Image 1 (tube, rainbow, N blue to C red):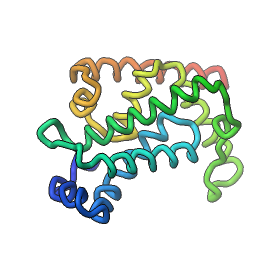
Image 2 (image 1 turned 30 degrees about the vertical axis):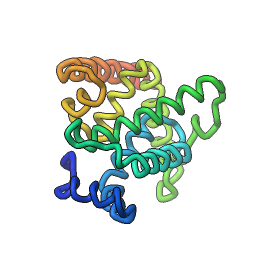
Image 3 (image 1 turned 180 degrees about the horizontal axis):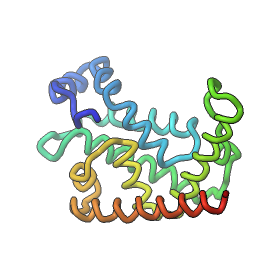
Image 4 (image 1 turned 90 degrees about the horizontal axis):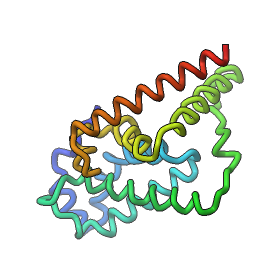
Length: 188
């Protein structure tokens, strides 16, 4: 797993406040982790693309508001990501719409029909299991496994204790495992 920050991150951040072109290295470094976190929280890749763009746009425009003495950049970045995702999900709840894309996303073109079907079925099973978790549990799972943050970083970002993060993650993972085993048993 990648370390939490770039070697010369503070220097790049300072330079990026003056020259937005300098932000490119920071963007490249964090993009995959941010996108994976967003994708873990929303069902559609097109929405994840849009939200990830919004996150980096907000980070770039608010970069002068970041103060390293208050906390690490990755914590600040993922807090912004969390807030944008929360706003989006809140808006979606108000609309009460479900897209077919949210239910069915085609697998990679390299896979044959059988592999594509199996992958789609596995993704649907995982998504259904994730829906059994509450919002906080889904958020912590996303931060841990899709954003690649450790428990200490998650604790800093969420205001929970590090041990509380660990307990919540442990229980959520157990619930996911049980749900997936039950689904596999029912499909046999």
